[in-house]
Length: 388
Image (cartoon, rainbow, N blue to C red; front, side, top):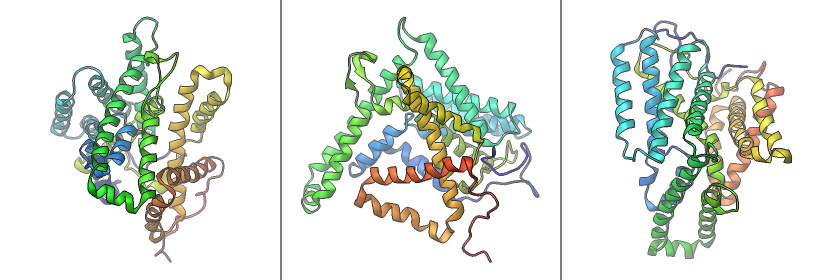
Protein backbone atom coordinates (compact mmCIF):
# COMPACT_ATOMS: atom_id res chain seq x y z
CA UNK A 1 0.00 0.00 0.00
CA UNK A 2 2.50 2.59 -1.06
CA UNK A 3 0.89 4.02 -4.15
CA UNK A 4 -1.05 7.23 -3.94
CA UNK A 5 -1.00 7.50 -7.71
CA UNK A 6 -1.84 5.32 -10.64
CA UNK A 7 0.76 2.97 -12.00
CA UNK A 8 3.14 4.05 -14.73
CA UNK A 9 6.80 4.64 -15.52
CA UNK A 10 8.60 7.93 -15.08
CA UNK A 11 9.97 10.04 -17.91
CA UNK A 12 7.78 8.56 -20.63
CA UNK A 13 6.07 10.68 -23.24
CA UNK A 14 2.28 10.47 -23.11
CA UNK A 15 1.80 8.78 -26.44
CA UNK A 16 0.19 5.51 -27.36
CA UNK A 17 -0.60 3.50 -24.26
CA UNK A 18 1.46 5.58 -21.81
CA UNK A 19 -0.38 6.94 -18.74
CA UNK A 20 -1.95 10.38 -18.99
CA UNK A 21 -3.66 12.77 -16.61
CA UNK A 22 -7.27 12.08 -15.72
CA UNK A 23 -9.42 14.72 -17.39
CA UNK A 24 -9.73 18.44 -16.73
CA UNK A 25 -12.73 18.85 -14.43
CA UNK A 26 -11.03 18.47 -11.05
CA UNK A 27 -7.85 20.12 -12.27
CA UNK A 28 -9.69 23.25 -13.40
CA UNK A 29 -11.61 23.29 -10.12
CA UNK A 30 -8.35 23.04 -8.20
CA UNK A 31 -6.80 25.91 -10.15
CA UNK A 32 -9.88 28.07 -9.59
CA UNK A 33 -9.69 27.37 -5.86
CA UNK A 34 -5.99 28.25 -5.97
CA UNK A 35 -6.81 31.66 -7.41
CA UNK A 36 -9.69 32.14 -4.96
CA UNK A 37 -7.73 31.39 -1.78
CA UNK A 38 -4.78 33.47 -2.96
CA UNK A 39 -7.16 36.39 -3.49
CA UNK A 40 -8.79 35.95 -0.05
CA UNK A 41 -7.50 39.35 1.20
CA UNK A 42 -9.51 41.01 -1.60
CA UNK A 43 -12.78 39.17 -0.92
CA UNK A 44 -15.82 41.44 -0.35
CA UNK A 45 -16.69 42.46 3.25
CA UNK A 46 -19.69 40.10 3.23
CA UNK A 47 -17.21 37.19 3.06
CA UNK A 48 -14.67 38.72 5.45
CA UNK A 49 -15.07 36.04 8.14
CA UNK A 50 -14.67 33.25 5.59
CA UNK A 51 -11.70 35.08 4.09
CA UNK A 52 -10.17 35.41 7.55
CA UNK A 53 -10.55 31.68 8.10
CA UNK A 54 -8.78 30.90 4.83
CA UNK A 55 -5.99 33.37 5.56
CA UNK A 56 -5.38 31.82 8.98
CA UNK A 57 -5.37 28.22 7.75
CA UNK A 58 -2.71 28.94 5.11
CA UNK A 59 0.63 29.87 6.69
CA UNK A 60 1.79 30.94 3.20
CA UNK A 61 -0.96 33.27 2.09
CA UNK A 62 0.39 33.44 -1.48
CA UNK A 63 -0.68 29.88 -2.30
CA UNK A 64 -0.40 30.43 -6.07
CA UNK A 65 3.31 31.17 -5.62
CA UNK A 66 3.90 27.70 -4.16
CA UNK A 67 2.03 26.17 -7.10
CA UNK A 68 4.15 28.15 -9.56
CA UNK A 69 7.34 26.98 -7.86
CA UNK A 70 6.04 23.40 -8.06
CA UNK A 71 5.44 23.73 -11.81
CA UNK A 72 8.92 25.18 -12.30
CA UNK A 73 10.50 22.37 -10.31
CA UNK A 74 8.67 19.76 -12.41
CA UNK A 75 9.68 21.54 -15.63
CA UNK A 76 13.36 21.47 -14.68
CA UNK A 77 13.14 17.78 -13.77
CA UNK A 78 11.29 17.15 -17.04
CA UNK A 79 14.13 18.76 -18.99
CA UNK A 80 16.62 16.55 -17.13
CA UNK A 81 14.47 13.52 -18.08
CA UNK A 82 14.64 14.39 -21.77
CA UNK A 83 12.05 17.12 -22.13
CA UNK A 84 12.35 20.56 -23.68
CA UNK A 85 14.99 22.91 -22.27
CA UNK A 86 12.96 25.98 -23.20
CA UNK A 87 10.03 24.87 -21.04
CA UNK A 88 12.29 24.43 -18.02
CA UNK A 89 13.91 27.83 -18.61
CA UNK A 90 10.61 29.66 -19.04
CA UNK A 91 8.97 28.24 -15.92
CA UNK A 92 12.16 28.48 -13.87
CA UNK A 93 12.71 32.14 -14.76
CA UNK A 94 9.02 32.92 -14.24
CA UNK A 95 9.08 31.40 -10.75
CA UNK A 96 12.33 33.19 -9.87
CA UNK A 97 10.92 36.53 -11.06
CA UNK A 98 7.67 36.18 -9.09
CA UNK A 99 9.49 35.05 -5.93
CA UNK A 100 11.79 38.07 -6.15
CA UNK A 101 9.11 40.59 -7.13
CA UNK A 102 6.39 39.51 -4.69
CA UNK A 103 5.30 42.78 -3.00
CA UNK A 104 6.67 41.94 0.44
CA UNK A 105 9.79 43.17 2.26
CA UNK A 106 12.95 41.09 2.25
CA UNK A 107 12.61 40.52 5.98
CA UNK A 108 10.10 38.96 8.35
CA UNK A 109 7.27 37.13 6.65
CA UNK A 110 8.53 38.14 3.20
CA UNK A 111 11.87 36.44 3.80
CA UNK A 112 10.14 33.37 5.25
CA UNK A 113 7.82 33.10 2.22
CA UNK A 114 10.65 33.37 -0.29
CA UNK A 115 12.89 30.98 1.63
CA UNK A 116 10.25 28.30 2.03
CA UNK A 117 9.08 28.51 -1.59
CA UNK A 118 12.59 28.16 -2.98
CA UNK A 119 13.58 25.43 -0.50
CA UNK A 120 10.43 23.37 -1.11
CA UNK A 121 10.78 23.65 -4.90
CA UNK A 122 14.46 22.69 -4.85
CA UNK A 123 13.81 19.81 -2.45
CA UNK A 124 11.02 18.45 -4.65
CA UNK A 125 13.18 18.62 -7.76
CA UNK A 126 16.04 16.85 -5.99
CA UNK A 127 13.77 14.10 -4.67
CA UNK A 128 12.26 13.59 -8.14
CA UNK A 129 15.73 13.11 -9.58
CA UNK A 130 16.88 10.72 -6.86
CA UNK A 131 13.64 8.73 -6.42
CA UNK A 132 12.25 8.67 -9.96
CA UNK A 133 10.47 5.35 -9.40
CA UNK A 134 8.47 6.51 -6.37
CA UNK A 135 4.83 7.69 -6.55
CA UNK A 136 4.00 11.37 -6.17
CA UNK A 137 2.90 11.30 -2.54
CA UNK A 138 6.12 9.64 -1.41
CA UNK A 139 8.19 12.17 -3.33
CA UNK A 140 6.20 15.14 -2.05
CA UNK A 141 6.40 13.98 1.57
CA UNK A 142 10.13 13.43 1.26
CA UNK A 143 10.53 16.90 -0.26
CA UNK A 144 8.52 18.56 2.52
CA UNK A 145 10.56 16.70 5.13
CA UNK A 146 13.83 17.74 3.46
CA UNK A 147 12.69 21.35 3.17
CA UNK A 148 11.70 21.27 6.84
CA UNK A 149 15.13 20.00 7.89
CA UNK A 150 16.89 22.66 5.81
CA UNK A 151 14.61 25.38 7.19
CA UNK A 152 15.14 24.20 10.75
CA UNK A 153 18.89 24.24 10.22
CA UNK A 154 18.75 27.77 8.87
CA UNK A 155 16.59 28.97 11.75
CA UNK A 156 18.95 27.35 14.28
CA UNK A 157 22.00 29.15 12.87
CA UNK A 158 20.22 32.52 12.99
CA UNK A 159 18.64 32.09 16.43
CA UNK A 160 19.74 34.48 19.15
CA UNK A 161 21.89 33.05 21.98
CA UNK A 162 19.71 31.25 24.49
CA UNK A 163 16.65 31.30 22.20
CA UNK A 164 14.99 28.34 20.51
CA UNK A 165 15.14 27.75 16.77
CA UNK A 166 11.43 28.49 16.36
CA UNK A 167 11.23 31.53 18.66
CA UNK A 168 11.83 34.19 16.01
CA UNK A 169 9.64 32.59 13.34
CA UNK A 170 6.89 31.94 15.91
CA UNK A 171 6.88 35.59 16.90
CA UNK A 172 6.86 36.58 13.22
CA UNK A 173 3.90 34.29 12.48
CA UNK A 174 2.05 35.58 15.55
CA UNK A 175 2.39 39.13 14.27
CA UNK A 176 1.45 38.08 10.74
CA UNK A 177 -1.65 36.21 11.90
CA UNK A 178 -2.72 39.14 14.08
CA UNK A 179 -2.37 41.48 11.11
CA UNK A 180 -4.40 39.18 8.83
CA UNK A 181 -7.11 38.71 11.42
CA UNK A 182 -7.25 42.41 12.16
CA UNK A 183 -7.71 43.27 8.49
CA UNK A 184 -10.47 40.68 8.03
CA UNK A 185 -12.32 41.70 11.20
CA UNK A 186 -12.11 45.37 10.25
CA UNK A 187 -13.75 44.60 6.92
CA UNK A 188 -16.38 42.50 8.68
CA UNK A 189 -17.17 45.21 11.22
CA UNK A 190 -17.62 47.69 8.39
CA UNK A 191 -20.12 45.25 6.92
CA UNK A 192 -22.07 44.87 10.18
CA UNK A 193 -22.60 48.63 10.44
CA UNK A 194 -24.57 48.78 7.19
CA UNK A 195 -28.34 49.09 7.22
CA UNK A 196 -28.77 45.89 5.21
CA UNK A 197 -26.88 43.84 7.83
CA UNK A 198 -28.83 45.42 10.68
CA UNK A 199 -32.06 44.43 8.99
CA UNK A 200 -30.75 40.91 8.39
CA UNK A 201 -29.61 40.56 12.03
CA UNK A 202 -33.01 41.74 13.26
CA UNK A 203 -34.82 39.30 11.02
CA UNK A 204 -32.48 36.36 11.66
CA UNK A 205 -30.95 36.83 15.13
CA UNK A 206 -29.62 33.25 15.26
CA UNK A 207 -27.51 33.84 12.16
CA UNK A 208 -26.09 36.99 13.73
CA UNK A 209 -25.22 35.08 16.89
CA UNK A 210 -23.42 32.41 14.81
CA UNK A 211 -21.30 35.07 13.11
CA UNK A 212 -20.37 36.48 16.52
CA UNK A 213 -19.32 33.01 17.66
CA UNK A 214 -17.31 32.55 14.49
CA UNK A 215 -15.54 35.85 15.09
CA UNK A 216 -14.76 34.88 18.69
CA UNK A 217 -13.41 31.52 17.52
CA UNK A 218 -11.07 33.15 15.00
CA UNK A 219 -9.78 35.51 17.68
CA UNK A 220 -9.17 32.59 20.06
CA UNK A 221 -7.32 30.62 17.37
CA UNK A 222 -5.11 33.41 16.08
CA UNK A 223 -4.52 35.94 18.84
CA UNK A 224 -1.66 35.29 21.30
CA UNK A 225 -2.52 35.28 24.99
CA UNK A 226 -0.42 36.61 27.89
CA UNK A 227 1.77 34.01 29.57
CA UNK A 228 4.73 33.98 31.92
CA UNK A 229 7.20 31.91 29.89
CA UNK A 230 7.08 31.90 26.11
CA UNK A 231 8.17 33.89 23.09
CA UNK A 232 8.03 37.59 23.90
CA UNK A 233 6.06 36.95 27.08
CA UNK A 234 3.00 35.54 25.30
CA UNK A 235 1.52 32.10 24.82
CA UNK A 236 1.44 31.16 21.17
CA UNK A 237 -1.96 31.02 19.55
CA UNK A 238 -3.22 27.53 18.57
CA UNK A 239 -2.89 28.15 14.83
CA UNK A 240 0.66 29.43 15.26
CA UNK A 241 1.56 26.25 17.13
CA UNK A 242 -0.01 24.24 14.31
CA UNK A 243 1.74 26.24 11.58
CA UNK A 244 4.33 23.51 10.72
CA UNK A 245 1.62 20.92 10.05
CA UNK A 246 -0.54 23.39 8.14
CA UNK A 247 2.46 24.52 6.09
CA UNK A 248 3.36 20.92 5.24
CA UNK A 249 -0.20 20.13 4.14
CA UNK A 250 -0.43 23.34 2.11
CA UNK A 251 2.87 22.55 0.38
CA UNK A 252 1.71 19.01 -0.46
CA UNK A 253 -1.42 20.42 -2.08
CA UNK A 254 0.58 23.03 -4.01
CA UNK A 255 3.02 20.42 -5.29
CA UNK A 256 0.12 18.21 -6.39
CA UNK A 257 -1.39 21.07 -8.39
CA UNK A 258 2.03 21.87 -9.85
CA UNK A 259 2.53 18.21 -10.79
CA UNK A 260 -0.87 18.03 -12.50
CA UNK A 261 -0.33 21.33 -14.31
CA UNK A 262 3.11 20.36 -15.60
CA UNK A 263 1.91 17.07 -17.06
CA UNK A 264 -0.81 18.94 -18.95
CA UNK A 265 1.72 21.37 -20.38
CA UNK A 266 4.62 19.08 -21.27
CA UNK A 267 5.12 15.77 -23.06
CA UNK A 268 8.02 14.43 -20.97
CA UNK A 269 6.60 12.60 -18.00
CA UNK A 270 8.46 12.59 -14.69
CA UNK A 271 6.16 10.10 -12.99
CA UNK A 272 2.75 8.44 -13.06
CA UNK A 273 -0.40 10.60 -13.11
CA UNK A 274 -2.33 11.44 -9.97
CA UNK A 275 -5.06 8.92 -9.28
CA UNK A 276 -8.61 9.52 -8.10
CA UNK A 277 -9.26 10.19 -4.41
CA UNK A 278 -10.97 6.80 -4.08
CA UNK A 279 -7.60 5.12 -4.80
CA UNK A 280 -5.65 7.07 -2.18
CA UNK A 281 -3.64 4.84 0.11
CA UNK A 282 -0.12 4.89 1.49
CA UNK A 283 2.32 2.81 3.49
CA UNK A 284 0.69 1.42 6.63
CA UNK A 285 3.86 2.18 8.59
CA UNK A 286 2.96 5.86 8.48
CA UNK A 287 0.60 5.16 11.33
CA UNK A 288 3.65 5.38 13.61
CA UNK A 289 3.78 9.11 12.99
CA UNK A 290 0.29 9.35 14.45
CA UNK A 291 1.13 7.01 17.33
CA UNK A 292 4.25 8.97 18.26
CA UNK A 293 2.34 12.24 18.17
CA UNK A 294 -0.44 10.92 20.41
CA UNK A 295 2.10 9.43 22.81
CA UNK A 296 3.87 12.77 23.14
CA UNK A 297 0.55 14.51 23.79
CA UNK A 298 -0.55 12.04 26.46
CA UNK A 299 2.66 11.55 28.46
CA UNK A 300 3.15 14.32 31.06
CA UNK A 301 6.91 13.74 31.08
CA UNK A 302 7.12 14.94 27.44
CA UNK A 303 5.34 18.24 27.97
CA UNK A 304 8.15 20.23 26.32
CA UNK A 305 7.56 18.25 23.11
CA UNK A 306 3.81 18.78 23.13
CA UNK A 307 3.82 21.22 20.20
CA UNK A 308 5.74 18.70 18.09
CA UNK A 309 3.25 15.98 19.04
CA UNK A 310 0.34 18.26 18.19
CA UNK A 311 1.75 18.88 14.73
CA UNK A 312 2.36 15.17 14.13
CA UNK A 313 -1.24 14.37 15.05
CA UNK A 314 -2.60 17.20 12.90
CA UNK A 315 -0.49 16.26 9.87
CA UNK A 316 -0.91 12.49 9.88
CA UNK A 317 -4.50 12.80 11.10
CA UNK A 318 -5.32 14.87 8.03
CA UNK A 319 -3.66 12.32 5.76
CA UNK A 320 -5.72 9.53 7.31
CA UNK A 321 -8.87 11.66 7.00
CA UNK A 322 -8.14 11.97 3.27
CA UNK A 323 -7.64 8.21 3.11
CA UNK A 324 -10.99 7.76 4.82
CA UNK A 325 -12.59 10.11 2.28
CA UNK A 326 -11.16 7.83 -0.38
CA UNK A 327 -12.86 4.86 1.28
CA UNK A 328 -16.16 6.74 1.31
CA UNK A 329 -15.93 7.71 -2.36
CA UNK A 330 -15.02 4.11 -3.20
CA UNK A 331 -18.40 2.83 -2.04
CA UNK A 332 -20.67 5.81 -2.65
CA UNK A 333 -22.17 5.79 -6.18
CA UNK A 334 -21.39 8.78 -8.34
CA UNK A 335 -25.00 9.96 -8.55
CA UNK A 336 -25.26 9.88 -4.74
CA UNK A 337 -21.84 11.47 -4.21
CA UNK A 338 -23.03 14.61 -6.00
CA UNK A 339 -25.54 15.20 -3.19
CA UNK A 340 -23.11 14.67 -0.32
CA UNK A 341 -21.50 18.16 -0.45
CA UNK A 342 -24.94 19.68 -0.96
CA UNK A 343 -26.16 17.93 2.18
CA UNK A 344 -23.15 19.19 4.12
CA UNK A 345 -23.85 22.75 2.98
CA UNK A 346 -27.46 22.39 4.13
CA UNK A 347 -26.25 21.26 7.57
CA UNK A 348 -23.91 24.25 7.98
CA UNK A 349 -26.62 26.81 8.92
CA UNK A 350 -28.34 24.18 11.11
CA UNK A 351 -25.38 22.84 13.10
CA UNK A 352 -22.78 25.46 12.35
CA UNK A 353 -19.63 25.04 10.24
CA UNK A 354 -17.51 23.90 13.18
CA UNK A 355 -19.70 20.93 14.10
CA UNK A 356 -20.13 19.90 10.47
CA UNK A 357 -16.36 19.96 10.02
CA UNK A 358 -15.76 18.03 13.24
CA UNK A 359 -18.31 15.39 12.29
CA UNK A 360 -16.90 14.98 8.79
CA UNK A 361 -13.31 14.71 10.04
CA UNK A 362 -14.33 12.21 12.71
CA UNK A 363 -15.98 9.90 10.19
CA UNK A 364 -13.24 10.13 7.57
CA UNK A 365 -10.40 9.83 10.09
CA UNK A 366 -11.97 6.74 11.66
CA UNK A 367 -12.38 5.11 8.26
CA UNK A 368 -8.86 6.04 7.17
CA UNK A 369 -7.25 4.73 10.33
CA UNK A 370 -9.34 1.56 10.23
CA UNK A 371 -8.28 1.02 6.64
CA UNK A 372 -4.74 0.51 7.93
CA UNK A 373 -5.68 -2.75 9.64
CA UNK A 374 -8.65 -3.78 7.54
CA UNK A 375 -8.34 -2.89 3.89
CA UNK A 376 -11.95 -1.89 3.19
CA UNK A 377 -11.29 -1.74 -0.56
CA UNK A 378 -9.57 -5.12 -0.89
CA UNK A 379 -11.35 -7.51 -3.24
CA UNK A 380 -14.17 -5.07 -3.96
CA UNK A 381 -14.83 -2.89 -6.97
CA UNK A 382 -15.79 0.74 -6.61
CA UNK A 383 -19.55 1.08 -6.96
CA UNK A 384 -20.58 2.75 -10.16
CA UNK A 385 -24.27 3.60 -10.74
CA UNK A 386 -24.33 2.80 -14.46
CA UNK A 387 -22.26 -0.37 -14.46
CA UNK A 388 -24.04 -3.70 -15.12
